[in-house]
Image (cartoon, rainbow, N blue to C red; front, side):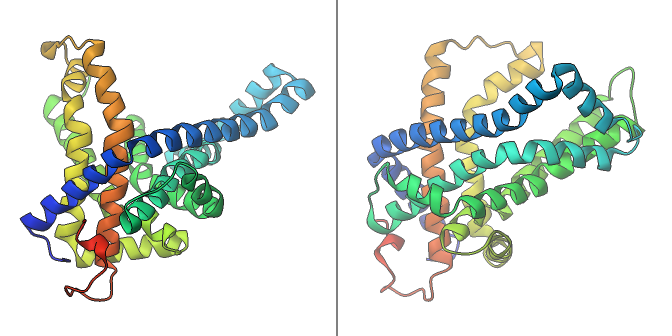
Length: 296
């Protein structure tokens, strides 16, 4: 069960989408509820900081304050400025990381018992809030941080007033895509590991270790779900990046695709990654392994 094979690969996808469809109502209610809670937390964070400042010093003073934070950094000091931006936005993004990570708690219940409830996500949201937030922040810094720093470095040190040559642009974009897929795939087991009881740093170590030991199984599963999630959006991506690929896509395409992404594909991703995690961390590989390994 731990080896990468066509049979195991197909079984992973089949079980993931079967359970996602079977529990679509629970995931629908859970995602609506957790997004509402996340929005409330975000508003509380923003209002707690901005409203007292607004009444105390005024809007102009707040703007001047943030400008004064940026001014000490010379244009070439991309690392320091990027660090300041991350320091400001990461606390705001943290509740979103928790919301996404809590779905893996529901996925764990589904994989182990073939069922869950919308209320279950709030249990994981509350119980693992700080660990999931820390795990999401680490993922963001590792996966997105280097790309932001690279873009900033290119703009500062290699400005191109007449545009970037096409071959360089293709190489850089391909490198960015490879980095995004490989780094996120290597860390794809972080949230299941946190749900399993590990700390954020411990979950990162375990995820990297599992990917190193079972590279083909982990990455193939991740690539499959990334393909399922991203490929349907290719027409719109092509239309956005070049007028040559002008494709008219009405609401009849975009709306069902969005609903599929939110309430089927993302839950299936959580279920599939969690299932693979439980398989790879099981103590044996015999026919007597727990029922979730068979997907029945």
